[in-house]
Structure formats: C-alpha cells, structure tokens
Image (cartoon, rainbow, N blue to C red; front, side):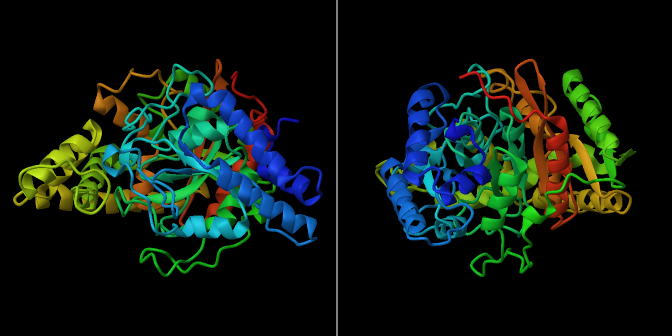
Length: 484
C-alpha cells in the first residue's frame, strides 16, 4: 500500500487500529516528497522535523489508549498565504521574504487541535493573483500529470502536492476559483465554502470580500472531514457567520434521486473545449442515471462577471497591499528618503501581475472614476447574486465545467493576461455571489484530468458534498494516479 496515496479517512482508521504509526506515515510522505519534489516543486518550505514531532505525539496518545480526532496524524500541506506561528509566510512574494508570523491563523489553530501533521507551506501565484502558479515570486510548480503543464492557480502548490502524494490533504484559498480550478487540473477534490463559513483570520488578504479558505483532498469523504475541522464561527473574523456547522460526513450517501440540477447555458457556450464538454455530457448522463433531473437555466448577467471581478478584486487588492512598503514586514530596499524607499521596495518586491492589479485597482478607486467603475461593479455584483437566487428557486444545484480547458502548457498564457483570466470564467461568479462550490474529478482527456463544478445556495455544503460523492462513486475516475 502506498500510504501517501491512501485517503485520510482510511489512514485515520489504520492509525487508530495501530496497523500503522503516525511517524511511519510522516516518513512515507516525506520520502515521497524527496523523490518527486525536484520535478513538481509544490513546496516553498518543508516542516520535516516539526511534522515528526507532531507524529510522535499522536503515536503516544494512541498507545496510551486515548481517543484521538479523525484527522490526528494526517499529513496536511498549507498554502503559503495562511499564517503559521513561527513559520515563514511569504505569499510566494519577494516582498514578504523573511516574514515570520507571531500567531496562527484560526484554521491552523483548529487543525493543531485535531493533531494533524503539517508538511510545509505550498507554492502559489504571488498574493494569490493568478491561475497557473507561474506568477510565484520564486519558481513555477508543475502539474504531476504532465510536468510541462501548469497545476492551475493560485492554489497550484497545494493541489499538486495532494495529486503527487506529497501530502494527504491541503488547505488552499479561493478568491475567484483558486481552489477549484487547480483541483480540476490536478485531478483532486476542491471545495470553496460559503463566504463566512470558514474564518479568514490569519489569511493574508488579496480581496477581502471574495477570499475563502477551503480544503483540497484526494476524495469527497476527506473533503467533508477537513471541512468539519475548519468550519465554524470565529469572533476574530468580522465576516464569520455564527452558523451551526453539521457533521458533513453525514451527507455522504450516493442518493440524488429526484434532485433538480441546472446547467447554466452561459457556462457551456463558446470557449468551452469540446473535450471538456464531452466530460460534462457524460456527467449529465451519470447524474440522470442516478435519478436526478437535469435541465438548462440562464444566469443572464454572467457575461459581466469577468469585468466585474477584475474591478472589485484589484480595487480591494490595491487597498490591502498598500501596507507592504518596507517599513513593517519583509523586504526593505534602502534609499535616500522614505518615499524613495517605498517606491524601490515595492518595485523590487512585487511581481508583474501584482503590479498590474494594483494599478488597475488604484485607477478604479481614484477620484472621478470610483462611481463609473467600482461602484458600478458593486451594483452588477448584486445582479449576479440575484441570478443565482432565481436559479435556486427552480434547481437544487447548478452544474458546470470547472475550467473551460484541461491544464494548459507552461508559458502558453502567461504573456496574455486576458487569456489567463478567462480560465476562471466558470468559477469567479461564485465568489462574487458568496456561494459554495466544489470541483470533483469527472473524467480524463488523454492523461489530463477534467473536473466538473457543483454550485449550491449559501451554507448548502452538505448538498454539494452529497452530489459530489454520488458522482465520485458513479464516475469511478478517482483511482488513477499521475505517472510520476
């Protein structure tokens, strides 16, 4: 048995039955990292000794007969924009090189109570701005299924680590598809929770009204387990909702008979690759065979989602990233006066995509343009949310491709920002509306995975997981492994 490819729920059972040890599991995962990380480059830093110390503590608890939480001893990777006490957190940006947070993010606190083993911090597009992990300030990450292709982004390092067996589970963040799109490209499960379900305390902000932390896992049951651990109200996050979180594993039954599932026509038109549409059509057949009724629905303001997103997100990024000036954290480039120091530090520290979005956002917020651009975008955002509300009056869930194409080759879109932005066309409206959505593997194009996306009303994660679980059981594509 390859422990590093075994789902967390199965590993947890083996640990509790003392058929394997947590130190043995940690060593297996780090041996795998040593073997494939030079090719994949999923990590920015590893926490080898810390993980082994955590593993020894879990083994001691189990040996003493103590009942441990479901995720105790499970190796988990963490996207590098989530703060961990005493561990360098850079957001894959040179401007934060050397920044060591003095506190844990809420999700890290909760996972420490679970007894998980943190394997390291994963690579990402700088400050989560990108769709390919080519915008990292340090190096790109490769897709484990084809090392010449991207793993998606911005949580590409986390998705690649899970797909390659370099972690059993991972945390990512999703601002416009940054969990779901890399999950689809890497053949794993990725869930973007309802805005406010998972605390953002300790998540380095990109666009505060859009960002959400969520799980990236090998299968749907693992996704439910990790969501159980991180969801719930946090008084330190003013946007956290006091919602009574259920046990999401209770929804994992392959029964969707009588469910109504809508396919937004705007998500399956021009721009969707024929091979991706073929996987979606097969998915519809499988869902229909399970007793669901699948029909078409319209989200008429979808055509405005891309420009709306690229006004709101850069505007919030412009404000959030103003704090990185060489005074308080990370990089400082010396200069003759403070203004020159600000300019030189930000010029040297930020990459091209971050600078592009800061300029877009600053322009949209500037005097004379605020009403014409940013305020107008907020109004359109409301219309997009109303489209979803109307659709959910007729349908239990919506279904679409996660991405218009399978994973593309490195360098293919990096010089064309608009082409890169279009790779998130099926995902970003979900963030504008604050809704939950999950990407689940549904098929392959050659050797490349293809994911489909279920979208649900607010706080209907249980419904999402039930549909994803039913499809996972029926599609039977989750047993394939990357040819590393």
